[in-house]
Image 1 (cartoon, rainbow, N blue to C red):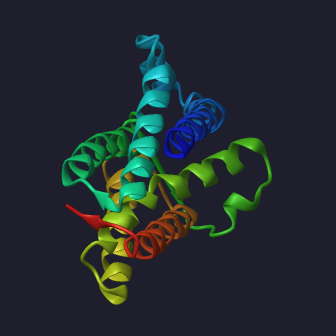
Image 2: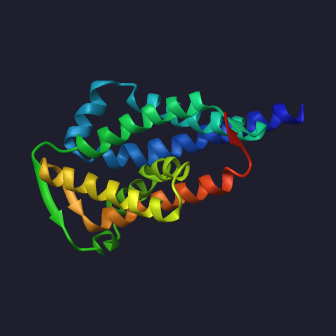
Length: 193
């Protein structure tokens, strides 16, 4: 009985977290880009589908963590959707947009848009840091993470789909570090099957 109650509580907490993340942070931030606004507007259930994905991803992770095993199939499904969403966010928000920002402190302009974008830039890369933690040691993790982030920023600039921003590099790297650290801590409590 106690386990059923705790699963219901985890389910509700996961759902609330997904609403906060998607409805209060992700959608309002992404909606400021006209291309995303049109993409989101094309499908009236975009927000609901994103909430559902985040909710299920978190809740299923918690359920697996409780039994001490994480399914490889869960990881395949989660990372398939995650990588698609990451690609969409990173490479489709702007058409013919080409900018360079070498100011490492540009995120410290304290307005709602900058704060939300900074938070999302960290959150986007937490799962990537976790996947790198599965096989990479600390030095390999640093090299792979930084090369991936530099590659993404360069692609955005070279192909006119975004801004090469120094602040994005360290925000994305912070996200990778959080994911790497979380995986290392949590992997002591469960095994991948």
